[in-house]
Length: 269
Length: 284
Image 1: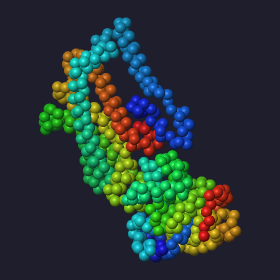
Image 2: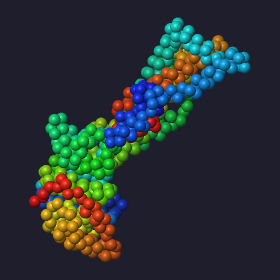
Image 3: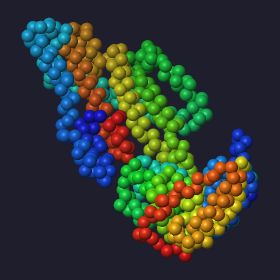
Image 4: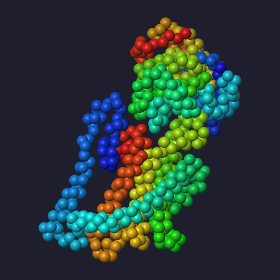
């Protein structure tokens, strides 16, 4: 279990990025975090990843405090951040250097197959599209077998069609070992598609506003029964979190999810 | 850069193109021997020059025709003198370049990676860099004598600065985001250097080495001017003192060929390490 306990972060310039955020994520649960800009989503994720130190509070995974990058926590960034001098295979296996070559190769091949990039294993990152690069990035984070996977707006730079197919690839990877997933996104549709729970955060200072459970079977599609009502609950919460001042542009993914190809789907519990 | 074609006999980007548009890459592949185009201009000039002298349009005493320069080259080569001079010059450059490049890489890596070290060392090094390296010659001769040590030192100093500058700025400007990837995967400082920093600065390092080598050739001439009994620089001085312009031009042409070959060697040796780059090799 990933537990975030009364976490606060004040930056050196006095910005209160996070204030008293507590959240418990069950093992194997997928939690999506949405919120207006400046609500501390990314700060929260960086604290959980151990990249930054919290001003107050703590992050624990199965009781163990995280204050530096930890083997139990994998992170994929907003940009793919592949190393351009490594082939796709070596990028995906970047976190496995300590393992025997044969084991590493097996794990990497398996992960690349799950994200549909077997044929690209020996390519350079520059030869891949943005969506393919992001798949490698997620595979790289998952290949070492972390207990928790953190995703920081990993699909935000991609077009809507690509994003929809990446949701499937992500769930395919997730289904193998069922890690805890925390995904930060600004796309409400993405949050409802992926999350068991959607956590809405509020800016100035960043804090939790509301948690909305999404009790729909996977795979979820925007036309599914109940999808719209879940989405509306999230949008309403977002609206309220911003004091009704600005409308949250959360419907960007509409046409995309409709275009999701039906092939290669798995059934989720 | 045509040198890649010269060495490998094939266009540099041919195997770098994505397989997906391999067809497109094939159509872009230049015809074999396209580099010959670069030979046209010097050839035309040489033939025109030769003709002008043959037809008595100009006097060839101070500007000897290509045929006489070629004869001089052949004579020098036959007698074994050319090999002796080339070897002397190359061994000076080789030693000076090795020392200068190694020192420049090491110091540049240290100052690039450590901000405190940069604050302490860089201003001094930049001030030293501002001194025209030839200005050191009298001091080096006093300190190290007029033989090899002072010559090699001068070349090493000349090579040091561009390599230092290139490596330092490359390391200091490695993408912080990639370094963060290393942190996420808990790389030790040493592993971070080996797996992220070094590969990231490799292209800039090669460029720095190449400008360093260029300066090495410049300073070997200066070094050989200050008193040498062999070397291409000696041939130049000797040609001036004995009034043999053909020998001077023969030495200059040899320099051009040697410089180009050494540069191509660096490019060819590092090419496999830089295959991941996107077309950059054409720009280098």
